[in-house]
Amino acid sequence: MDYLSIIKQPIAKDLDDFIALFNQSLTHDDGMLGSVLSHIRQRGGKRMRPILTLLMAKNYGNISDVTQNSAVGLELLHTASLVHDDVVDESSERRGQASVNASYNNKVAVLVGDYILSTALLHVSYTGHQRIIEYLAELGRTLAAGEILQLSNIQNQEISEDVYYQVIQQKTAALFEACAAIGAMSGGASEEEMQEAKQFGQYLGIMFQIRDDIFDYFDSKEIGKPTGNDMTEGKLTLPVIYALNNTDFEAMHTLAKKVKSGTINADEIAVLVEFTKQNGGIEYAEQKMSEFSQLCMRYIDHHVKDKAIRESLTAYVDYVVQRNY
Image (tube, helix red, strand yellow):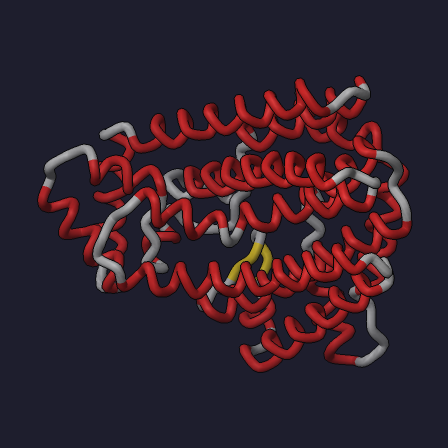
C-alpha cells in the first residue's frame, strides 16, 4: 500500500506551499552558510511532522499562513536540533548523507544550527500567535533537556523502561505532540481539542521512536546507520531493555554495562543484538507499538469527522508502525 500518497492526499497543495517556504528559509547568499544550508536542504525527508501539523489544522478548521509559518518554525527547530545532536553524538551520517559536522567541522555545525534555530523563531513570530510562540520556545527547552537526560542516563547503571520513555517523551514524542497541538491551535481548536490532539501526537511520537529503535537491530543501507549504532553511542533501547529485564543472563548484563561505559566493541554489540532478538525484545517493542496504535485510532474514531482526513491519519498511524526505514 502507498501510505504516503494517502497521507498527503487532503493537503497536497498545502504541503507544496510548505516545502517552498521551508526551502526559502534555508537559503542564503553567503558562500559558506549558503553551501551548508544547501547541504541540509538536500536531505529532504518525508516531511512527516509538517504533514501532521497541516492535517491537524485542517481537521479543526483551515490551513492558514499561521499554520504554514508554525510548520516551518517547527521543522526548522527540529532541523537545528539534529545538526547539534550530530555534534554531540559525533555522528558522521544523517539519513545516509554526510552530517554537517563531518562535511565541514563542529564549529560550523554549531553556528549553522544556531542560525537555523533563530530562523525558526523568526518564522513562528510571523504567526502573531502568542500561545504558539510560547509553545515552540518551550519545545526547544524540552528537546535540549531530553538530550541532556539521555546523556546523563548513559551514566545511570539502572536498566529501566520508565527512563527510556522519559527520554523519548522529551525528544521524539515532544516534537510530534507539538506538531499536532500547534496545528490544531492554528486551525482554531478549543483548549480541550488541542490537548486531545497533543496526546495523539505524543502517541505517534512514541511509536515513531520505537520503530526507529527496532531498526538498530537490523542492517539496512536505507536507514543510514550500522546495526548496533545506538549501543555504540551508549544507548540501550526498548528491545534490549526488555530482554535484559526478563532474563537472567549475567553475561548480557555485563555487556549492557559496557555499553553504558562506552567500552563495548563491535563483536560484543553483535552478541547483545542477537541476544535481544532471541529473547523477545523485537516482539515486545512491536507489541508496545500496537498498543499505542490502538490509542491513536481511538482518537481518530472520536475526533476526526472528515472522511479524507480520517483516511489520511489512519494511513499515517499505519505507516509509522509498518515503515521499513
